[in-house]
Amino acid sequence: MNDRRLAVHRRQASPALDGTATAGPRRAGLRWLLAALACVSPAVLAQVDVRIAAVDPEGSSSLIQGDPLSVRLTYQSDVPLRFSVAGYANGSPGPAARTNPAPVYPAGAGEAIVWLEPYEPGYLDEVRVKVHDEGWQELDVLSQPVSLYWERGSRAATRPAPEWVARLSAEQQGMVRQAVRAQTSAGGDGGSFLVLLMGWSIPAYVVLQVYMLSRFSGGWRKAALVPLVLMIPLGLYTIFALLAGSNLWPLMLLFLTPLAFLYLAVLGLVRLAGRPAAHD
Image (cartoon, rainbow, N blue to C red):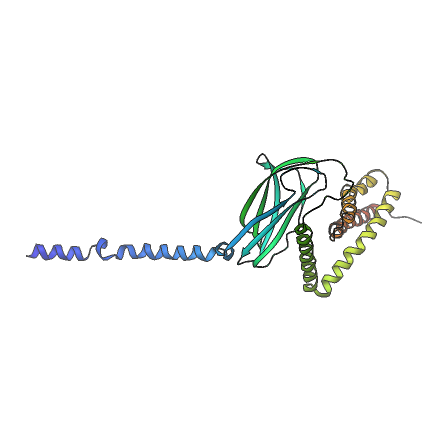
């Protein structure tokens, strides 16, 4: 009788039956699960449905350098979205291209456009559209087969495009301008003053560049030539964007010219500080 009672007592105290030994690991596992869920971005849990509705040009086409490839997107999303695009050939990135800005599209149902314009002649057999949330976290990648070849040349007349290209491009540019205005307004008078300084840096740079090239010689003149490596291509790009009718043609000039001006200003100060003082 005593041996039987002892066996019952041992069975009641067994960790495998009463669960006391597994309670700790279970609680720890639950805590880890809750922590992992807390780290998941709301955008990942949101319902996001993006589809490629149309491509222009369609089918196999030969294009002139400067002709864009446009992709029409439709979306239904619980969170705001951004879209970017890239071209590929045989699974590898295609030629470098100018692409669309990526403003924030509002949550809900809507349409968007992405486009690219290769800088050099080349071939693309695939276009990939990346879907991002407002903070640029990648949510999805869409792939669309194409067969397009860009070659050098000029076109006598503008290539006709579908109605949606002009409509969605105008909406996208309006969203970009609105975002710039909102950012400037958020900065208050300080933001407006900064934009004003950026604008005045353009003529100031031109004057300083011409002055230094005319007055400097030797190594100092070579150092003064450095900004032209950036500014000549930037000037050509700005003229091209203006002639193409882009409403954003001065943006790159506003952002990069202050850097060239500051470089020349610092160079001039260094040369002035290194000159020997004049003696009577």
